[in-house]
Image (cartoon, rainbow, N blue to C red; front, side, top):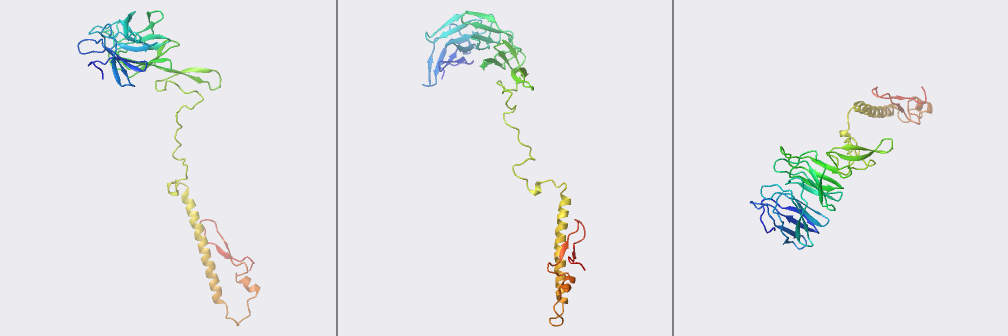
Length: 323
């Protein structure tokens, strides 16, 4: 763990695969102490101390050097900036900023150091400053759209995002980004969209809800396809789950047809039995001729049935050979 107790956390950045912790507040004044953590050995080691104790300093690494920008010594917001050289284990002053800043964000853009927002001791700030390490000078940068003290920043895809902070009146849940090509801030994310006619691409802006890297126009807008409507199923729904609209007539038709077939079958059977019982005893008269058989309705092909339309009376037995 850290060897010093700090009421305000130190500034933190990565340095050569290790975690560098710079300054902080011990309850009385800004701390000068710095330490570095090696996650491989799980060991903390001391670093050279800052020239000026500072807390709420903006800390980052660029070109193998650690920068501690602004902050507070005790009650005074600072313009001073120090740079740490790990090869020498030494902090050195570089040119100061034009504006006192504590709680600023710091990152890199276009090969320069950029300091974003913060607080000057009176107001939350929307201004930014750029440091050119080759020239060793600070120049004004583009103003943000909102004042942001204690802001967090990160560079993603070459663009700088400023997230949250305190405007001086309220804590913010918004973010804005800096486009390194135009060096302008925006609360919208520009993306390329191909025209409907297949012509040259045009630029449009989409709100914060759209991810930073918008999908190409050829891809679907949604990450996943929308689910199919519930009415469309991989398997047919059971008969009880289907709509009954229009089914009453179909059910009635089926029932009538079944009833007609059953009734016709019963009548034919009854007719056969009646004819059999009415026939004379064997030996009383000669065997029935073909004409008699035809007249009785019991020809070689037997009785036939003719079904009436659905809803009519039962089918009647007809003679297929004529009277």
